[in-house]
Image (cartoon, rainbow, N blue to C red; front, side, top):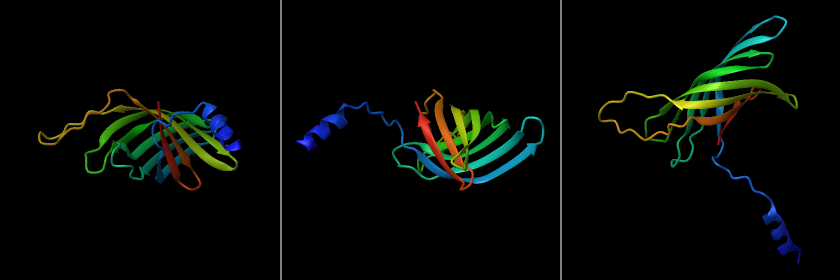
Amino acid sequence: MLIPLAFVVSGCGVSKPVDYPAVTGRRVQVTSISADSAVSYRLGAYELVFAPGPDVARHARRAALVTDFAGGHGHARGFMEWGRAGEASVLYVAEGWARQRDINGEPLTVFELALSPLPVQRTRNAESQPVAATPLAVRVVVREASGDVTLTRQR
């Protein structure tokens, strides 16, 4: 009696659809320059590399992002490469916001970015894959202590 009831109860909840799997990676380099003033101001540059994903879907390969933080949040911009194994990368211009947080003693940098495709001139014989003209929305979380990175594509 309890097992069928458990199936009914678990099926009644609202399930959140998973649009895209998270992509993991590493922070390869980071450079930071701080200015001491009444409000803390810091410039940061990040180079990120992402682990290969499934061959069926395009995924983030690498990113270069520049931030300017005033009081722990600020503007972020740069570029990202996306692609599948064996095909040319698609370049995206990244622009959005970043904020720094300390959660349970662990410093995090969270990027909320819109990625717009950047047209790239290719040779005549290179086969071009269609790219969505709609900007992609992504969240990138950098765990500052370990250098671990997680990218989640948003709706």
